[in-house]
Image (cartoon, rainbow, N blue to C red; front, side):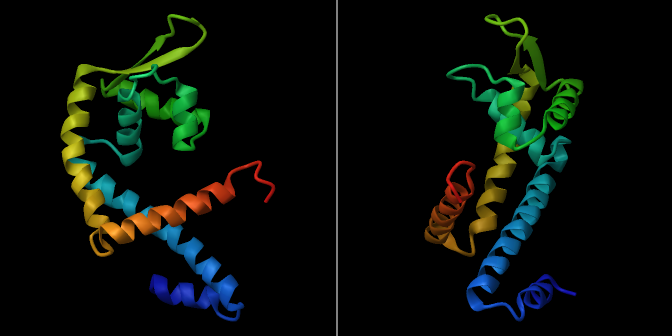
Length: 163
């Protein structure tokens, strides 16, 4: 059964506002899954996944301060175990390193290796067009409107807002 048919069945019989909320939520999940698959496909020649690419990108962005594994965990919405496995894989591939912090030897800082920096630059040339291709049917204005709407949903879902 096609996704749209399943979605229609899931929302059938609900009041219109609830049906729309259910459909929009399911669509966000589905689109996120498909987008990740599209980015993974663009990254296949580099033997990395979207999550690994995002980790490399975040580690490379150390202009203010080096990234710590806990920061990476929070940004990727991943558990400590998931981040440990992710970093183990990146280290095994020679793309990133964990090193003790100069300020606090109990803490680790993440850095890219030269091969990691090189791969990130090459991979970005494949990922950026894939991102753009995903939004081409709605155009720049549609993408901005979607981003504004998603920011509002994100803000409403943040813990501590009393919802």
